[in-house]
Length: 529
Image 1: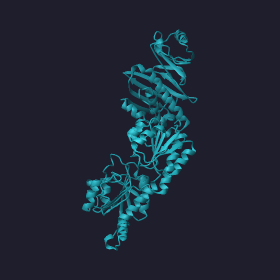
Image 2: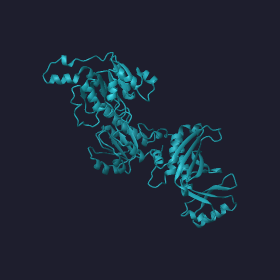
Image 3: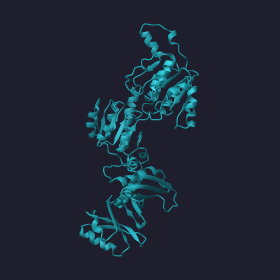
Image 4: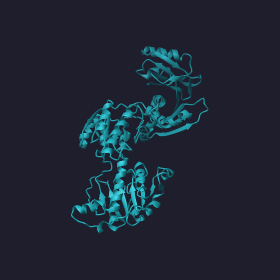
């Protein structure tokens, strides 16, 4: 990936000072403005290339659409549910978080709530402050020998498991991504949720908030659990259905809950907060000096690494960019964009494009399938009205435009290794192009049924003409171009000399009006690369 230029960054919340220091040390100007209202942020964000937030700033579609220059939104923490990722993706803005910055802090708070639930520590402490000495009222239970169900076995779930195993708890869990053999090496037996619910004495959730996890613990779920099960949520409000939890607490089906997060923060409905069997915190999962320092430092370093073209870490909507940090990938991206631009130019009279088929050939292209597809589409869509495609947003833009995209990778016989072939359909007409990188330069090998005798270097001003084979073609075109003040710098002809064929002419400047060629050729297209 070519380095992204980030010159100015706005930090809209209290972030560790190391964040600003690291950015400024690397030549990025930083402005800190906290507690801005939505309209204030919308007015301010127009001036910046980057935005760094924690969890309080709600980066809505309105704010994103007001950000004319924004290239990256960095969330100093895990999760990005305060950022409209879809809106950012549509505008080609990278959304990045710090996936491991608060792992230890969130895991330790989870463990603290589990221990507090087992021994009624906060309630007993409050009772003592009120002048009471009531030992019987706060009878607890040991964690030793109990079963802890961990829903979500990522970084935090893993750390919770290792710590609670030290108390002699049996740890079981569920995760749709992490393989069972991996979690088994941590001492966590994986199983389905239907198997997990009835076995647990305690349940803790560590999943992102998404449609599939909203209300994961519901009336139906609690009914499947052991009577008196205790639950902890230090992840995101809404994973546990708050109304269902209250009903389970009132009936005794749930014996207690430790809540660090709520659907609405701060919660206006105090029923759960005020319940005697609920231990609640004001979203303290990442509220440690160490986590804040780590998250602030991590987001700054991740932005700097991306700007310097070193690597991409923590991007939640731009995974295609992760493998674009080598010189070879830079060259292939240029190839894809150039081939797409050639086809866009040649098919301009037959818009709109409805189908794109991309084929990569050879082992050397196997790892490039994702970004080759995106780069070809960038070239194809780059001249669309109101469209600013990049590798982040181009797939969603293509889908929005009704373009069907297919990608195939094939082994080659050696002769065609490292080749990218593209076929598009525009208004029922098919256009084809093939290219590769030779000597570090993207070249065009063929256009439709014309295979060039010498590869065409995809740089500079290029004029493509389609005409019948004619010995006088070059001299006729050269004469016309001369009358327009345009010089020929190169000429590429196809190997085949029969039928209507495409030729490529390198020119000193683009023609003001292609219609001047109408008397000489059947089709004409031009572009500057």
